[in-house]
Amino acid sequence: MVVPFMSIYCIQQLHFTIVQAGTIMALFGVGSICGAFVGGKLTDKTGFYDLQVGALLSGGVLFLILGYQHTFLTLSIGTYVLSFCNESFRPANSTAIAHYSTDENKTRSYSLNRLAVNLGWAVGAGTGGLLAAINYHLLFWVDGITNILAALFLLKLMPRAGIVNTIKKLDKTISRASAYKDKNYLFFIFLSTLFGMCFFQFFIMEPVFYKIQWHFNERFIGFLMALNGIMIGVIEMVLIHNLEGKRNGLVYISGGVILGAIGFVLLNFFPGTTIAALIIVILMTFSEMLAMPFMNSFWISRTTEYNRGEYAALYTMSWSAAQVFAPFIGGEVIAYGGFNLLWWLLGALSVIAAAGYLFLYKATH
Image 1 (cartoon, rainbow, N blue to C red):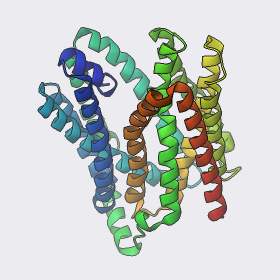
Image 2 (cartoon, rainbow, N blue to C red; image 1 turned 120 degrees about the vertical axis):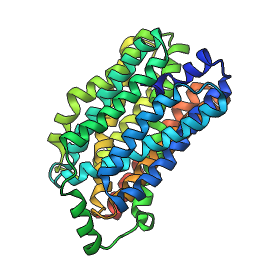
Image 3 (cartoon, helix red, strand yellow; image 1 turned 60 degrees about the vertical axis):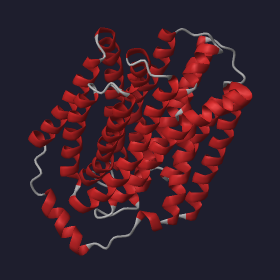
Image 4 (cartoon, helix red, strand yellow; image 1 turned 180 degrees about the horizontal axis):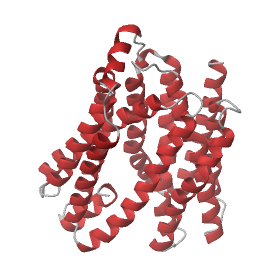
C-alpha cells in the first residue's frame, strides 16, 4: 500500500527532489536484496516459522514509525531497514509453501500464492489511492496494522507445533549443498534476473509510454494494469492445473519469455489504439503466467528442507536486483534512443533469456 505511493509522497508531501525520491526507492531495492540474503540464511538456521512472524511484526511496527520520518536522512534509513525486514519474509514464506506442498501440487501451490499476492496488490493499491486522497499517513497506519494482523493470524491459525522438531531432525540427517555452488542454478538466477529486468518494464516504462506516446488517460492505464491482475486471478490456477506435469517446466518458462518478447516488439508496430493495448497486456500476462510459477518449481526441485532458504533467498534477490536495475536501464535507453530502442532491446534480451532456459533444460536432462 505504501510502496506504490512512496515517490509521490516524498515529492508532494515532503517536498523532496526527484533525485531524493529516486534515492529512497533505490534504497528500498537495496534493502530488499540484503533482507532476502539474510532471510535465506536465517531460514535454514532457525526455520521458516519464527522468521515469518518476526518479519511481519517488525515490518508492521516499522511502517508506523516510517510515517513520522520527515527528513531525507531519517526516511532513507527507515526505508532501508523496513525493506530489509519485509524482504526477509519472502525466503521464509517460499520455504513454508514448499514445506506444506507435495511434488504433485507444488507449482499450483505457488500459483495460489501468486494469486494471493496479486489480489493483495490490487486491493492495496486501490485502497491506498483512496486513503492517500484523505491523508498519506493513513497509508502507513493501515499497512503497518495489516502486517501485524497477518503475524497474529499466522500464530493463531497455523501453530508452530512440530515444525521446529522437524528442522532439528533434518539438521542432523541431511547434508547441506550450497546454492552458491550449484552452477546450473546460478545460471538460472542470471536468466531470471535478465527476464525480470525486461518484465518489470511492463509496470515501469510501459505506462509512461501509454501516456506520452499513445496519449491514454490515467484511468485507462490503471485499467490496463488492473487487467493483468484480474487475468491472473481468473486464469492462472486453471492454466497451471492443465499444464503441470505434461512438459518440463523450463520449456514452459522459455515459451512464456518468448511471449513477452513478442509483446515488447509489437509496441513498435501497433498503432496507439485500445485494441492494441489490450493485446499487449494479454500477451504480457500470459508470459507471466507461463513463466513465473514454473520458475518457482525449478528452484524448489533442486533443494532439500535444509538448504531451501538459501535457494529461495537467491531467487528473491534476483527479482529484487531486477527491480533496482530496470528503471535505471529503461530511463537511460529511452534518453539515448527513445522508446523504440527500448522495446527492441527488451525483445532481444527476452529472446536471449528464452534460449538460455532451453539450454538449461538440455543441460539438466
